[in-house]
Length: 362
Image (cartoon, rainbow, N blue to C red; front, side, top):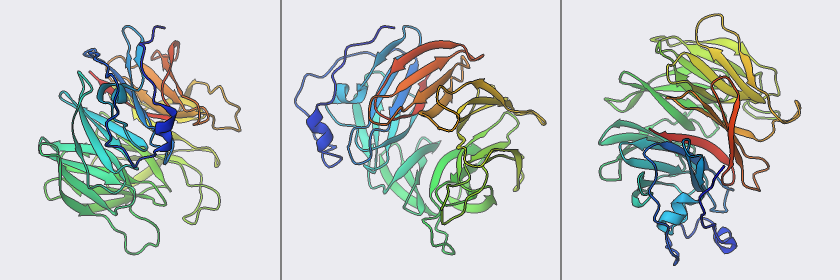
């Protein structure tokens, strides 16, 4: 596998943390044109070290460009890169602990702006060209931002006054018609329903404890993967489960229950919307039709009593190939494994520290 030569972040940069995110470093910037299509890997880095990074992978040539954001801008990405969205020719990367969203051109990786004034942003979801939602871990509200002006224009309160926990900590978002669904993961068990026309929470759906990921299938059903919490959690601890909310329904039903102590995560779906994939040690797939059982597609290289480094999962919506992020020990640089739709290994490449998410550029 060929790799592009790239610069690496100096050791002293790691010691500066997230305090100097806006500082431009004096060095020769790369001038690399990115292919029209490819895959972004969001490397979270280590909390409070300010060493988050972006990698870019070209599936055709199998070339990898690591530290692509820093090398293109002379600018550290920040502290804990959480997620990313591509819309038209722009990429929006949410940097959680730095409280900002960087906006850059996907053809050059050059920064064109940033959205600030956020508490602990997690995910970005576009409603229109001039309105998007940003979920948050601690703000107890969802920020309304204007992508055209890069300004925060409002907020949707989601505070649960009846709870002593930091609820609702909102995460991923999916949309069906005018309704946006967001899962409340940390010490919570709710899916909130937001009317995107009025920017108000209009309903909530109870699920199992700690829903960590969700998708919508081709039949407009919502699927939710819940990890069940953890031992000694003050919010409780139960067996994880995969749940389904029928289109137009306000009730969740359990489709699959997992062994307590396992940690299912990373629920995703293929481009045709008929097959689910998720991590639970290895990689499992399951058809969305009624009565389907999960199938172990890719075995984990780690012992059965260890979750291992399988940390992120995504399916290419065009080719249906699978990409699995392995964070290893969160100290050394992680790996990404590429598989065919049938689970056959295709490629392996090294990325940054803590790879946790993917974003396709098609």
